[in-house]
Image (tube, rainbow, N blue to C red; front, side):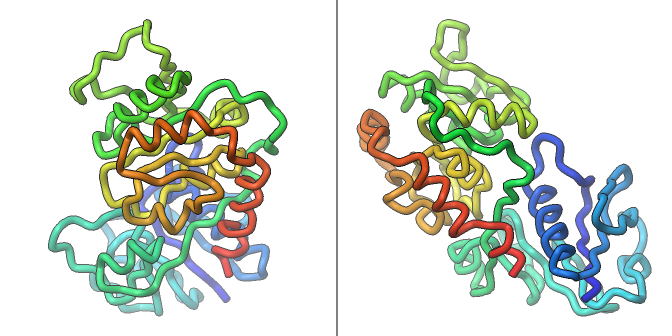
Length: 292
């Protein structure tokens, strides 16, 4: 089958870029399965396993899709596309009142149900994009992985949880901390902010992390940070909102909207098995499973 994957951004993702990572992984695996993959993406993109065409936001999409394509996979909402059969993966939370195309597919069961749909595909992780986990390494700290300045990701609660459980915290993600979120970030705090990191830097932190702290305050559609962390053997301590109960079983983490309960769990983090966390991801959130 000749598949066109469309997104209005560059590939590959170097640091941040959840959607970019997913469409890269998906195209790579579909190509391995003998599908012919073409990307229609922003200028500056490149790919060793697929043809790359440059997306022009000012031009009708019907004119940009090659005639030889069998099906189109959009990764954002489009209007007026009629040339070929298509689906649209919804990666984020649409705005209030936004009309979604009837061919929309979501990234978790909760994500779909909140929009009156049933079609969803969980993301799957490509281990080739990451350093091989060393699950025997000594665990020295905990980590937070999200846009730190984005209030709904709730880095403040993660800092509180680490502090109250007597743990160091490494904050990964974003270009800054939002100092308007009700806390003072000073060099005296037992917190290191690393900002945007590449895969090797991320792996270096997670290899030595006891757990991912993920106390989000919104309806998380999926959360690639969760499966990345589990891949490195890190259990997940998070709020139980939206997709989280689908992703985090009691064997690989603790979900609660009670911060004190999460802190109590962090003090007993050694009850979780790093190898089991890793195997859980490979069994349930693999690239092959997503592509199939």
